[in-house]
Length: 232
Image (cartoon, rainbow, N blue to C red; front, side, top):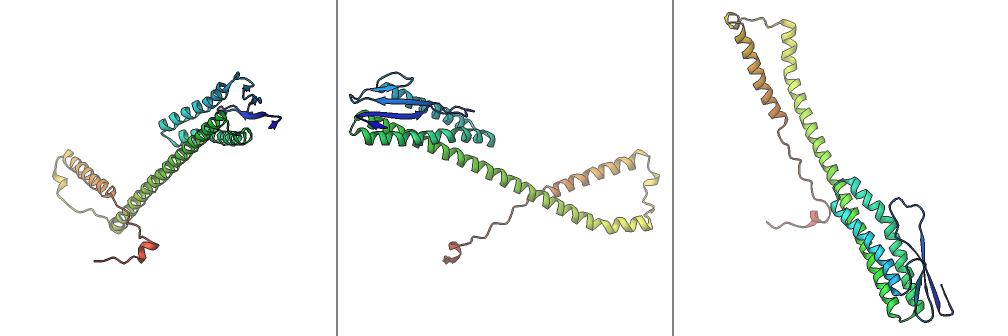
């Protein structure tokens, strides 16, 4: 607001985590060019302190974004950064209007430029955190898809084995397999231990077969690349 050479700026303090009600802060510039704030004292240093508070909050969120490891961490950073980004945009808009009202005042120009830097820093940090969150979600989705693919292949192989041995087991159950194999004359522990050993070895072979890696087929390229003629 401007009247008779006086300019009044209505701004907000940097938003805090969990804060629902924003606190206002006022700056008054008299016709002599002196700045007076509602709670930061007088002079141009009052506005510099106000801008420095925003810088401190952005630096704190930059560190939190650099230390983030999970989607919850990135979501927390984005949640705290969203109101700060809106506040810096409003601050830059306010300082731009003040610059137009005041004219070629060096302090007003510097304040406007600092507010623009704050807005750009907050915007870049927000985009970076959002991109990291999107990448993390896509990575988790890809890992889950690969795990589901491996489980489907294992289930398919297990079904093949079951289908292969099902007729044999069925016929053996119906007609019986009480044939003489020579193990009857051996001492009691030998047939049992032999059966256990053979069963373990077959189990190991089955585990290796079930866990054999299967690479997914490469996706066919579509779009403009299909129309490009490949020279031999």
